[in-house]
Amino acid sequence: MYALVWCILTFGAHLKPICMHWFGFSGTKLHFNLFFRLYIKQPSSSTSIAGYDDEPEWAKYKIKETNMFTIDKYQQIGFFPREKAFSLRYQTAGMLETVLRAGVLGEDDTGEESPKNLKIPSKWPSVVCENCLYSLENKSFPHNGSKGHS
Image (tube, rainbow, N blue to C red):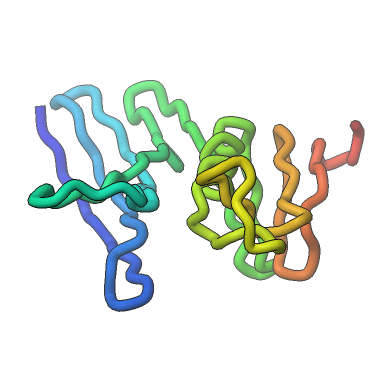
């Protein structure tokens, strides 16, 4: 068994890491996987205990994995750099929902939390379906295939 991993950190305000990108491979001599994973730092708890240093919690999401023995690929996010857009599969919908609801992107438009500790970044959060495209110019729209069938 062996593993080789690269990690890239993304920093937010005050040089605090907010997400980590992991690239690497692991496995045995005949069977190994290439992987790309995203770790997103979860919001810290509003409750603190004196003398207890709260360790940051990181949520792990599998973005892409390739089994080199069977050549099976598991792609969760597709990037389109020229169009400045990306696509998501349904497994990633849970990840996006978690990030939006956890308050990583800020409070809702009214500045209130309802229910408590639930923060929504906008009155119109992106709707995630099984296959959606997201771009800088538009919100989101369903993508059902090259022929445009529903």
